[in-house]
Image (cartoon, rainbow, N blue to C red; front, side, top):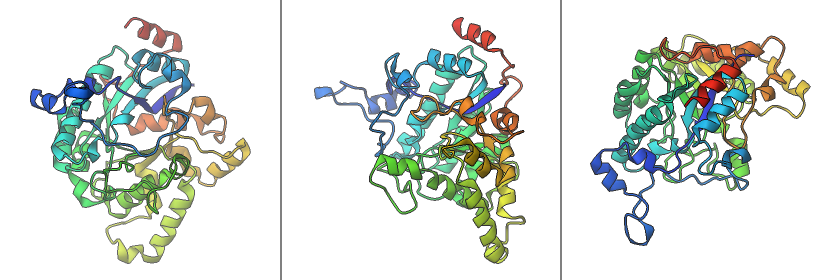
Length: 382
């Protein structure tokens, strides 16, 4: 079976890896551990995340080489080989909150340095399976658009990562249009990852009713922000203005899709023709054409029959779902977890074809189909 992983996470060993890509003035501003007396002096490059899994954020195996889970290139390569992945889009999960930094100038510099770090640390490796995304400071949309144009033509860049919601406004708001215009011009889809609305410094909130008390509550409800951004982008006419733009929603599971789209279509039939005159089709039609949803974390029912029955309530999902592992997160999803519950005839589309037609794969950046043995030999040579 041929597999494309639409989201595998990578991380730094320490933030000094990204600081090294900053200009001299910003390096001095940020500093490093021990730069000041008593071990102080390093300004964090991302805002704090208030919800942490008490059992650990990463897979147990991800700690074997030491350091932060996702910081080992060799472990990522071996995992892709073991799971039969021919291409993977890597996302810097620990940098998702960079766009929520209160200092807008620092946020822009962090995103710029992070993109150079991703290019040099991960995409320059001699592994044609790895592709990246452009992290943008979306609280300053014009600067974000410039960053897309600066690095978006790299042959191994496959999309644009919105990251944290620094403005606290749903992503359908017209203020974000410069970002979407730049992405559409370069043929890059937008990637929205759950978890970008949870910073203690951000105006946005991760759940519909406000902050929750525990990680378990947050994890169960983390699709809320994805639903909000999805409804906003469709309802505010983003895809009407930018008909070539597409968006991938990551980190919220998939079982919420049918009820949301059914309700969206029903409400639109009631008030939409007068309330949203810029829409020319039902919201569900925009969704099926422009939106893809990652399988990570897969939130199927306890038994295969129930999950398959739920998915079959909306046959269009066969063309919407894209396999994503979320590696090395503790709730990572492996190909067998997904294929074991897919309805008959869905496997090729969900595991490969939907992502293949969704991301921008340049001729230079497209990875050849490698057998596991060939891929493994390629990683060993590095």
